Image 1 (cartoon, rainbow, N blue to C red):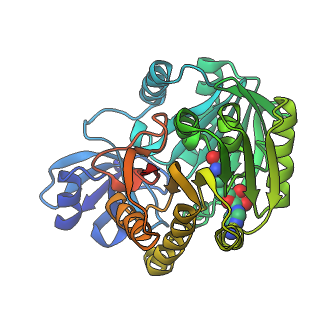
Image 2: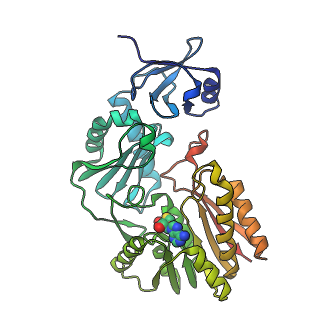
Image 3: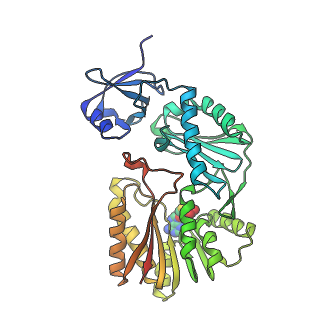
Length: 387
Ligand code: SAH
């Protein structure tokens, strides 16, 4: 049997040497490996570089798993999952929903496992983690004894791997609705249909952070299921939660009822229009929360995204009372933090507001950032105080 191997050209080798974990198709020199296998990597002189997930379809051909020459087998993957879970035990204290495994940052590239109470949701986003799916299910059952495991394999990136989009129960049963507690608030999740794997777990710690500064009248502009709105409600006089999607508002209302929170109202509207209207009507708030969807999905959309972020941040800053807080987020990987800070600074200048940055936050710690793989850092969350 010929051994599975992939030979990498100098540019790819340099990329790995600098700490990145991906090698692009154009930097592959030779392949003798099955799609979805875990071949050994070599440079052109035959020096061993590591073992990696190999894809014959994606532009990202190779995703480094280990730089050691060890078998990537059941025991290996089990140890990596255990290490990921052990880290979560340290950092997650008051939440039943969190990310258990985050791909590259847990050194199992392209694998996502989210925990929602007794249920697990898995995403297999490259050919190799698709191929080991049965083994992953077995390991997750062995290690965590969930009542059910759902695959949310509907992200579009699967198509780039030549994998079909599918949502199916892989183990046990997964009900249409799962209720989990986060920082004392109960949230209903629809794991089968909700965004991502059901919810925005990456904002979990930012919801709590926002609550520290909450007071008076609060406007939550891209509310989805009310993650921010319901978290800040206890400290507020009243909260208005806004979302364009009727189904998001309906789910947020259910969460409100479930927790018997009475000072949150819901508005189905376009936040761009509503912010403009409130600005023109001289309405004032003590906190405005901006957590829009990614405006920059690729490089080409960066200029339009910048204008979008500038517009909503400008309006939000204009309608804030003195000593008010702006919680402003961007989940566009293509808008790095320095650029986001610059956009908010320009918005503050145009709004004639003097502001201080109270906190520069990012995705929750259960979505760790692999320092040498900038793609793993996508969420920015600034807490800004208007002087
Ligand atoms: N803040 C939420 C997540 C928000 S996701 C949390 O912490 O859980 C982004 C939300 O913005 C989605 O629910 C989407 O329906 C909504 N949305 C997108 N464009 C919008 C617009 N122009 N106006 C209002 N809501 C919008």
